[in-house]
Length: 323
Image (cartoon, rainbow, N blue to C red):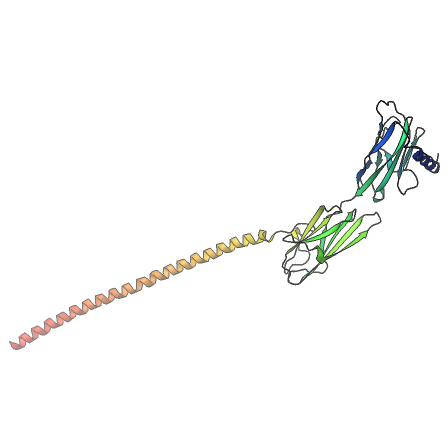
């Protein structure tokens, strides 16, 4: 039996399934698959109370929009397309777990699937949906021009690839201000169905912010990853923390704090030296007047003594004259 005849047979099963029977097929409403990983569409056959020893005659898995079935079990034979199989490798017609296993999940695998099961006690059809996601790469920030400084401004470009569904790039300032409205984002879809996101943020001359963060968010609004870029005067666009793109920037306080300590020590030493010099000069200044006064006192006393001696000599001379 080729795939074309199997398709006609499955169409007949879908028309006949759902009539009064003792079995039903219960599938999980929605399944999540990761791009490049294995995915599982969960479905199981359930029987009415008291019904046992059910034998499965036919199982068919079909995807909406695809003509040929992905997997068919009929007349004790299993026909399947590459990447599709029963979830249990040792599956047989008495195993009620009819879940579908998908390897190397692709974006094209996303969609609605139909599972048709026919047993010796009746049959039923059930649907389930697969959603595929892919995580975006860590954002990379680069400068459109050679240099981006706070004084000259410039344009920052943020890129991230390999995500699905379409996400969003947002920009934030160093105080967590949202700058997304000032940026322009471009979206590109690759051959694999994944998305590439690119966003440009133009900084005006005299920007007051030294750090800008680019973050990528998925379609559900959850942040997947981010990168911070540090803008400095006189530093070119390659001046990131550690010199590697995607590394968080070193806070300015890490550099400024040691400089402040060293400066304080230098100022303290200079103050001590000036204080000692002033103390020495003050001592010399205070000692000089005392010595001068002392010499002046001694001079006055000597003059007084000399004056007294002269007066006594004059008295003696007068007495001798009178005599």
